[in-house]
Structure formats: structure tokens, C-alpha cells
Image 1 (cartoon, one colour):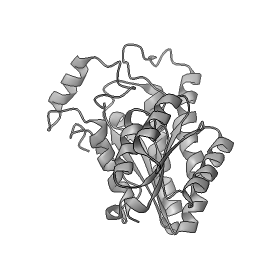
Image 2 (cartoon, helix red, strand yellow):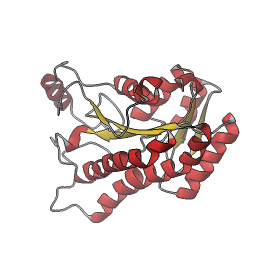
Image 3 (tube, one colour):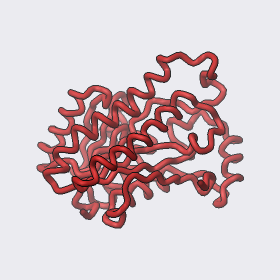
Image 4 (cartoon, helix red, strand yellow):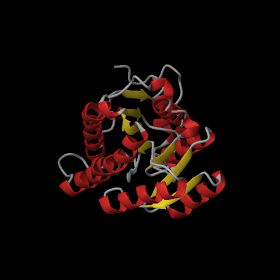
Length: 252
């Protein structure tokens, strides 16, 4: 299915990477839902900026009933089922100096990340799959991180949740492939600059840029381009994969 024909749900779509992904899909003519939990002003402003083919909807992706209501509202608004899901919802600040070290981190911190990243993705996939099946197939793109290949800063809770999401990506690809649904992951490094990375010192950005073959830190817009690939017809034979988009910093 061409991107212009798709109905796309972007979780955590009001800011940062999510907003860049929303703009990328809208720029290709897709109908897009900006899911938000606590960034209502930004979500509504982005929807107003992009026009009638974009809507904002509040839902905590960890709440299955709220997700099901969002999926139903999307179908009512756009007259068809969601074809494409981007699991991007995240509540995290990348500040190495303020992170919890392994000897001190509590399970509540771990559980918080798993609830949004893994439970949220599972809720959204399960709610969207019936509509995808009625439509003859679909696309799921999960947003990951290069930190489990290159844990330069040990964000234990965030990295563990994203590693679990990669596992879910690969197992879901096996279950959903016969239904014509592909499931892939796009993993970034530190992006310059999002709300989540705003606390990162410039010296860290510069250090990372110097270690990449491109000598630059990936932008949210560049990252969003790779998400479009996995939603496009050109990726129709690709599933269960993890594409690292970080300027070549991680190459394995």
C-alpha cells in the first residue's frame, strides 16, 4: 500500500521523534493519528499545523481500554482501519548524570519503562491487528535504541525495555507474517535534539558525532525517513528486522 493511502497511528506523536514521524507521514499524504498522553498542547498544535488529514487523540497506551477506544475513534474519523502502527511512546529523559545506577535502581523504575514501551506496544498491536486483517495486511514499526549494542551510558530501565521490545518485534513478525503484517524496528542513537535528549550536554553530542562515519549526530527528521521505508511498499519482503539509524556509529 502506498503511504498516501495509509492510516497511521503514531504513539507519543506530539513531540521529539514522534512529531518528526508524524510530519514525515503527513508530508507523504497519509492520514495520521497523533497519540498523546500528557502533551496535549503540542499534539493539538501539530494537528492544526498539518490539517484535516491529521487528528490528535489522548490515550495512555498502557491502558488497553483507552487504546481500543482510540482505534475505534480513528476508524470513525478516517472511514477505515489503521494500516500502520508506529510504537514510539516514551516517558524518559536522557541525562547520564541523573540516571539511577544498578546498585540503586528500583523495580518501579524498570516497571515504568516496561509498562509504556512493552505493554503499550502490545496493547496497540493487539487492538490494531483485526483492522489490518480486514484490510489485507499492515505495517508495525517499533522504535528502539542502539544502546543494547553500544551501552555507552547504562540506562538500565530504558535499555532493558527496548531490548524486550526488539524480542517482541521478532516474535510478532512470526505470528503476524501469515496475515500480511510486517513488524520491524528502527533503532536510533542519541538524536539532536529532542525533548528526551535536551538534558544532554553539547560535549556529548560532539563526541558522538566524531565517532560516526558521517561525523554528525542523526536528526529526528533523518530518523523518520527510515521509519517511512518500513511503512512503504519497498519493504514488503522485510520483517522481523532491526535497522540501526545512527550515522554508522553501531555497525553490527
